[in-house]
View 1: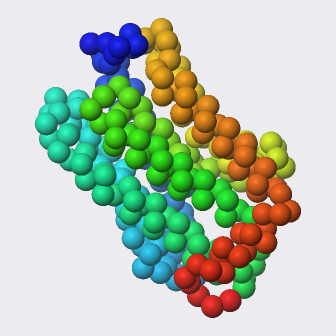
View 2: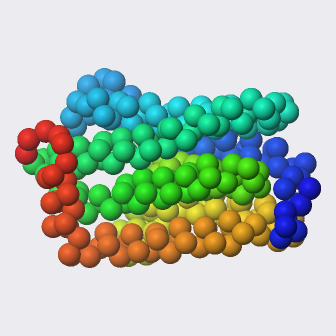
Length: 253
């Protein structure tokens, strides 16, 4: 089956590629979030986890569980269950965006009164939340176009999984390339961009061309990364970030 643009919707190699992506995603989640979660469990976190942070973590973990289930349902040819289960994502996406925004806002509000003075970093999770929300919503809207839908789900998940990988390897990359304009792009977005590149290379290898999603959404996300790094390093951003953080619900500072 091919789309109107001549892009094959299915290829026998899709099954293993998307299963491999799920495995890589889970490794990133474990690498990035297991250590801080363990520290928080042992009472070693900078501040107690508010309810909004608990909801945030639970929803993002549920997204990973849902993604895994969806890939396995397609592998076992239970597309009807896949479609019904996928409708739950439509309700999850706005909840994930809102809890992500307020959980990070709570964190940055805490650090207004405690070191490190990290409010410039606020733009990075804001980008993650916004990019995930936009691309995941596009995926829901395109759920009747399988080739487009699954690539948008892949990209949306790559954004949040890239954030997890960055937690795990970002410090090593920062030590190697620094935290300047280009250094921020490398130490923050390398994992995400490698996942993007894997999808583009897979489509080129299996179809001999790139899907329109790869030709439009991927470049748009990469351009946003450069904009995010520019904002992060702009002296004009810090007072704005502090103002946003101070307006968020959270502990006194």
